[in-house]
Length: 422
Image 1: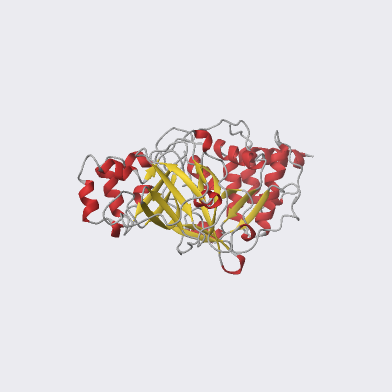
Image 2: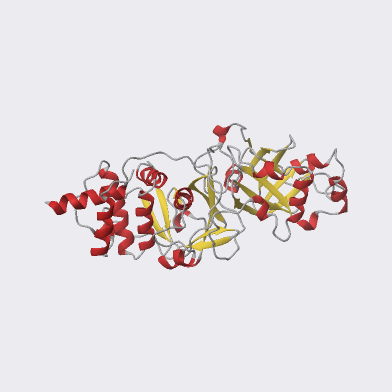
């Protein structure tokens, strides 16, 4: 609910063109502790010249969903890492105050994408390979047309860069930390003890859909195969655990495999061996356990095996495929690229399992199997440079709205008027 007092706050910003966080006043608000917490964050951002993100906090406070996001930030009960791009990165992405292009849901989801669960600085990233972190963006939100609320969160891949930097690696583009975490001791450090604020050089982009990823050169045969068996939409459709897909390189789809694809009795099983819509499986899970058993769409099971040399295999029967690139995060799921078709053919019959799994754990099929936090881990693949680009705001959104009667902006205005009238 917006009160008539709001115009006074606008007048205040014109008369005193300084950071809102710099107002030296006792703020009177129904949620005074939240106001103090957010004002402390804004103080830190202002001091470090990160004023667009500071203005975004005020913008979020003006909407019900944004206010809920800020409230959850304060009451998270866990360590969180806020990734904050500089002003010029927002400018280049077209995200500038007064944020007229941001819808309530898309704007909030942008904040959730930049909020990682856990403490993520260079010290938490393995020396080689990568780690996988969970954002605060539920899979059910961004670019998804279903109204099913997921238990899983959108993931992000983190790698070490030069000079102790952290690279936030999306196959579609990267962002890199520009320095270590900001010093919070000067602005209510104890109050902000659940936060790490880490500046990055680009605005993060939302992960692409599977159909977009499979348009990339070298992966298009899998897209055709999914269409042949009528599974394209099923894979992208949200389930409570997301999806995992193993995509063979185009070069391994030989004539024998293409003949299988025109056999109605074999094609569904072959394609179904490559994905599940019951779970999003990232490499830290199988690395930690050495081996992992994953039920797939065909009704069969894959064994994902981590070897001492740092490589990973996905095994179906006698077929062994090497995972040549793991943990490509997509909207609502994850893709791993492999060098074999997961179906017995004459070219795969010579492959034998030279390294049998030692410790195997099966994934439950229930929704409870999806953890809110994705564990960290490592692998041996780390490449890719690029610039994150924010896509147009989605036309469909299913995020629910919780009505809140008073926003932070109103609270700040009330506080100023009360103090000023004294």
